[in-house]
Length: 180
Image (cartoon, rainbow, N blue to C red; front, top):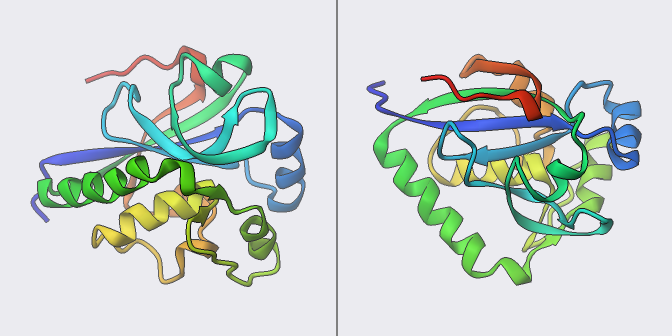
């Protein structure tokens, strides 16, 4: 595949109570997934807390590693992967993302979907996603097939296990310096 572009998948662990509960079940080191179109992660998207102080108010969020929820948890650990894609795939992803941005107020956090993963049963609602389901959905709708499963069953750890992901950083998110 002629790949002239990349997207970046960030997996994080903030150490919050919610992530600790998820981690008890998943045993995975990272329990949140985000997608970015640049190595600096200055424009990053996911489903998570709309407000750093309220874990119950979740939905579609534009994230920033320097502000918002991540700034509240300075010991956040992470792993960053580069996924090589074509220019056309990036264009498709950005079009899909535009729909999320335009309708951001309509989207809810799919807490039942998180429970569905534990039961190995996909729980899907229109306009409702959890973090890794959202990232997998963006990829799927752009024609990028990484797994043979529904986005509603994709976990952050599935990104870690994929051969398509190229590891570019692992450590404290606050210490990440994009290298070129």
